[in-house]
Length: 240
Image 1 (cartoon, rainbow, N blue to C red):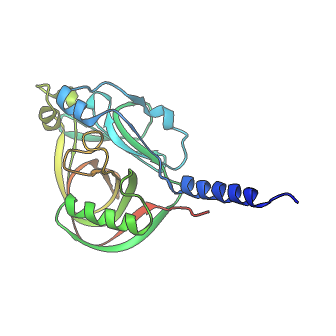
Image 2: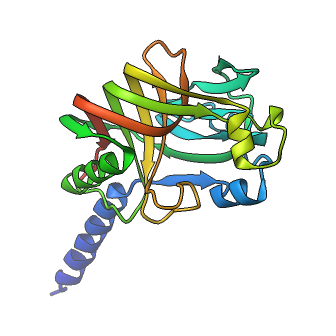
Image 3: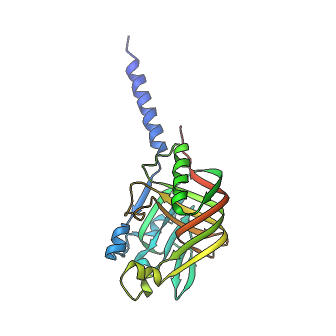
């Protein structure tokens, strides 16, 4: 009689591998932040047109030449360009990026959570805790979203094209830096403990962009204060 146990063993291995594969959140990145900031390597690293038809696509980053900020939510581009102190929103994919962090998320888990946080560091801790609770591996990169009213959001849109010097501070100064109070916002960010200097700044595990509810403001988030209930969205981990 043929032994059936080896077949059962291989079936269990296949099921286990399938579950593990479905649990992983794939995050892609193009460009290296520390090279952009220290060495002014600001040429294009990826064409956004590559993702024009990608379903469930989410991305943040900086346009080629540091000519503005990239924000793509569920396949919808809401990119920001600062010119002579004025912000312009552009919604097409006919651009390139020098830095891009991206993921495809088919389904989110939405959590209503009360947050009392005075800075991004505190929010970073909350995201890690909630991610672990849902089964996300915090030693791997994953996207997240925050929706709702925030107390204060400090943000900027970079603009190297009008800078008078070749430095990151000059690029930022030539753009727009603002604070928005009591705004109803949508935030897209990426958490990673492995990408400091790659797509997060040193000392931080977050890279975060935002857009207001009217989609008339967007930018890179420098600091965030939340004092109230918001929606935290994390990728749903499929078990089967």
